[in-house]
Length: 64
Image 1 (cartoon, rainbow, N blue to C red):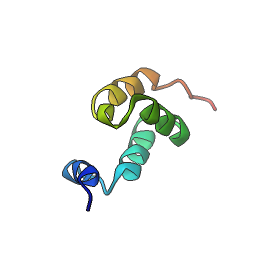
Image 2: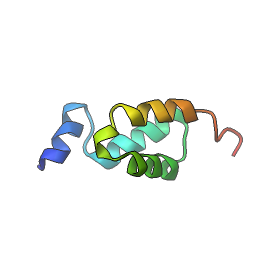
Image 3: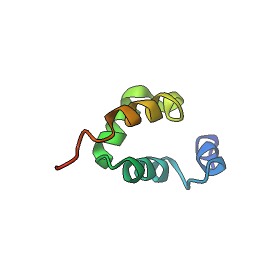
């Protein structure tokens, strides 16, 4: 297990993919959108700024 994976495990996820997939499902956003947003913000922001941005985007894709 790498140090990068340990933060995900500590928060109940198998790895980064599991975490981002969970966010996609929880907020009803396309997985590709969540990955792109996470990549844009960088891994250091995956627990703060990413959540805020996802909350702001929630509902953007309704009806698609």
